[in-house]
Image (cartoon, rainbow, N blue to C red):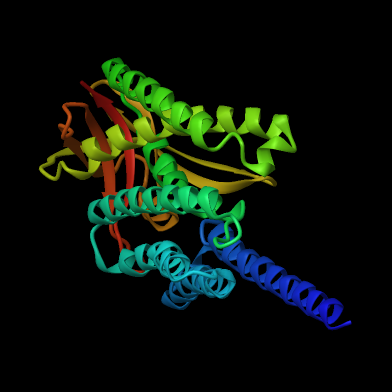
Length: 316
């Protein structure tokens, strides 16, 4: 009878956690969505919503760390949990106080540390599965910094720099072979995969994609984050454009002429409204730490604590 009550209490607690995460996630999504909206930008783009957004993100990680901490039965598991989840909270906390490039470096380092901790916990779980608690959410959380880095890297457009893909493919291939070897040697016999072969196959595919993503992110991040000696370039705005729709965030673009070629660059909404066709704006040419150069538009808004950087076009 007591066991049934404990199970019932646990289920209620889990439902409560789920409702909490859903509500916080929805609020964060709304702030992020309307913060770039054409109609609600002025209301949501304020210091209050910046602080609220940051606080809610940190709160989610903190609650998750406490939730997992209580479930761990070993001292190592508890230490791992506190380090693992609050590492991401720390990244978001320091973001407003450091330059954008430094924040990207911290983001990359947090991802590397998270993967190392996750691998250690996974090996511990294999040896003593009943002493260590691990769920599907742990890998998902570990991938969050990678997702943010992929989004940052995907906004970079390099023209004439096809050579960048060579080290990306080579690095991804080597990493994929090594990762699959470790995974199939040590992890394929976990009960979770023995019960469903399709899950094992899907995990292998995801690992391969992950390895190439890591290779791409690492190279683009190093090329971007470790180069801070730009050459200012003044370009003329030849047109303006707004892209909006029911299923996408409103984006604001200025079309500029660079080296006799026209290129659209995404800019913050206040820059869009304060800039007219025929005006000149300053962009910067970076050589790139690895030799892959690019133009970017850099902006520091009055209500935005960090620089908003939008890579435009580059050349090797």
